[in-house]
Image (cartoon, rainbow, N blue to C red; front, side, top):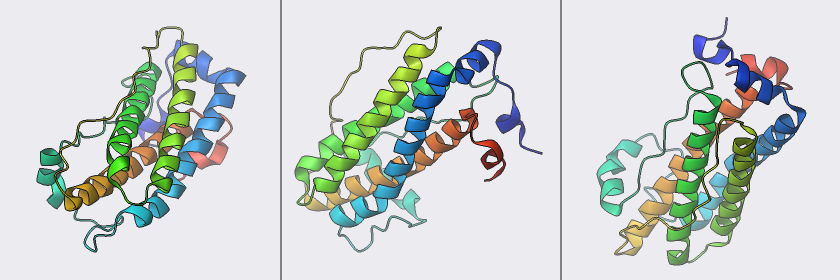
Length: 199
């Protein structure tokens, strides 16, 4: 049996919207873009993070929490599966805000990197996914989409090591957030079928 959070029915208004074929089409594009982001993070990390101790699959990310605060990297918003307690509107807003945050972080870091091509390509994918999320927000009758705001996040990067740490932490955080986005989108995908029962 699936967990309560994953099996909870959507509220009536959210359910009707999710069943709309146009919504499902945007959802499919969003899932594809999310997977593209996840697939490109490792290569992007390898291309721009050259400090030996900063590994993408490292489990000791907690040791950088003080440095993340000193640099000024905000935490990603918390994204849950859509349920009675976490509405579609809230889920779409959190996805949008999280993508906007990471787009801003990447745009602040990119100018300081020697090799930025893959970071710029990743920023484009994050932007494209954010555009799809905005389209879903606009379809949500109860949501008035806020005008898009784009800008870099102000980071304190006095030296090359801080740039490396900022790039590393941003990519690690974007990867974790993208996994959450993928799970949330999968829970809304009516074509997913048996995939929903897999972890």
